[in-house]
Picture (cartoon, rainbow, N blue to C red):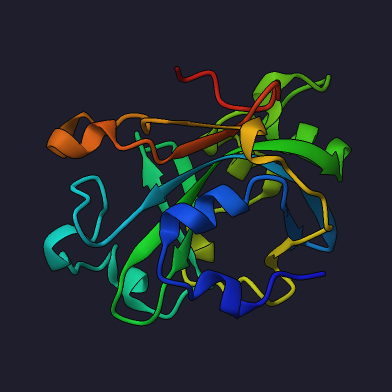
Length: 199
């Protein structure tokens, strides 16, 4: 079942990020279905979180989509090479987001291998935020995409993930975030080989 907009429009991005562990992310690009099980996420809050791109109401050409109602894609380029895929959450004007960091591939694996330039299924197919977007065909052109339509979407397949099977730890690569660097808002599925290698 596709995850409805109401799921994304709740007020707590930390809760949403944790609950997305065990859900599924899919793309249907150029007629090809690819996707997998979400095993790693990070939450970003517009209030009291210096790591969030919308901190202190920052509004730019890049962040404007963050101020839309939850349930749309926020994609952007890092290092001039990797696209990151975020889900905007909360209601309009409250610019929260969840970054998808790790995915266990389940569907369309041959196409994912082609997109990543790999010949065999291995961890670096989708175990990292910039790798999974390549595998799924997600680009900056998907900025603002409705995540309940038929291009990029999430599904709830009624798989229960026990609370104790989710590891909470500080987020990755946010040294600029002052005291907020230590917030335990990165969530990983315990024992999954598909989480990113970042400690």
